[in-house]
Amino acid sequence: MASSNIGPELQRMIDLLAKLPGLGPRSAKRAALHLLNRRDPLMRPLAYAIAEAADKVQACATCGNLDSINPCAVCADPARDRSVICIVESVGDLWAMERAGAHRGTYHVLGGLLSPLDGVGPDDLKIGKLVARASEEGVTEVILALATTVDGQTTAHYVADQLLGKDVSITQLSQGVPVGGELDYLDEGTIAAAMRSRRPT
Amino acid sequence: MASSNIGPELQRMIDLLAKLPGLGPRSAKRAALHLLNRRDPLMRPLAYAIAEAADKVQACATCGNLDSINPCAVCADPARDRSVICIVESVGDLWAMERAGAHRGTYHVLGGLLSPLDGVGPDDLKIGKLVARASEEGVTEVILALATTVDGQTTAHYVADQLLGKDVSITQLSQGVPVGGELDYLDEGTIAAAMRSRRPT
Image (cartoon, rainbow over all chains, first blue to last red; front, side, top):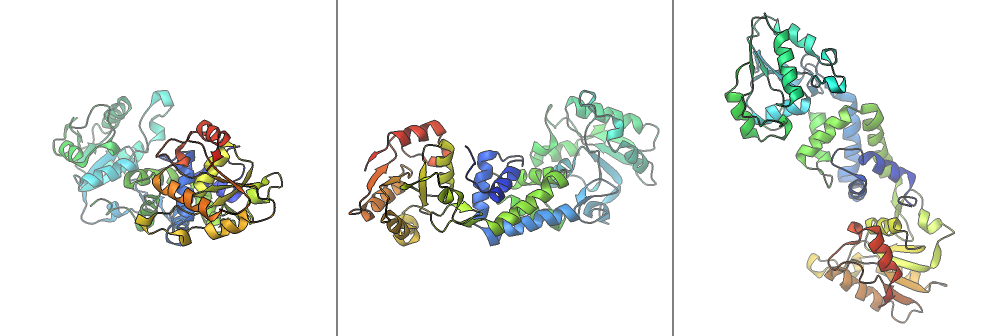
């Protein structure tokens, strides 16, 4: 019964909106009505912006950040310190680090964490690429900014092992990061404090 | 600082997503990453569906429901009972009534509630159109399915007054609807019970 009298175009939009994180079937209907009441100021611009982003936003070939230019704005910024690379799990975590404003170097997005239970092994992450970057002239430090979960710390140890013998110091965020927490949920102050008191692994 | 390193296409999509009810600035970023990781199965279809709905979905000229056909699927359905018209505030409330499956007649969407404080008067609602419909041959009952808020009940009384002298019975949902509640938030069972015990106004 639920939606038998909602037209197919409307139903299709609602079904797709309901797949966004944070929206469910009912809030997707609310969002649909909200959009239909604001076609020119919001609905058409949103459709265009999503299509545009789908075509133009790409992963940076160097660090894995998402941007419409390649290399991304962080890698291309001459003011960033190329001697320090901060390793993060995801682009969301990179954005969380940028919000904290505590890192003036570059990044490397692994694209996930090692997780034997979920079948995620080293080959599924951008670790080889990281080792190559860490071997480049002038790189002096690699900062492991990974979650303090089991998978995050397993990944941190694995990455540190891969970098053994390279002429770089390997550090990690201090335990200011709450155990079991994930970067993207943290307040900026905690991230900044953890960044300041980072220590050798 | 917040978003200085997010490209303009990405930032624009995030800003627009954050205007949807239920999403804020952070959940919009999550939604953006979710979309970018599912470009072909979700992101491009969503952009297309929103653009398509913006162009095709329109208000039914008879009842005010939103559909891609005009008259809408409810008004066009030969199985619906044209002698009973259910008055609702919004399309969201019409959908809530349909979810409950308790009404086999047609609808009339007022497009709001009378609200002197917010400057909403009778001319801002589709009341004249309703009076014309209620005067048509064969209409025997008008059901007021409005919120039990002050504005909802003020509107119900005003509509009932406008229909005085017409040869229709005027009923309203029973007080199974919780006082202060709005239809769209109700469970189907409560709506169905209120529909069954509707009473003359």
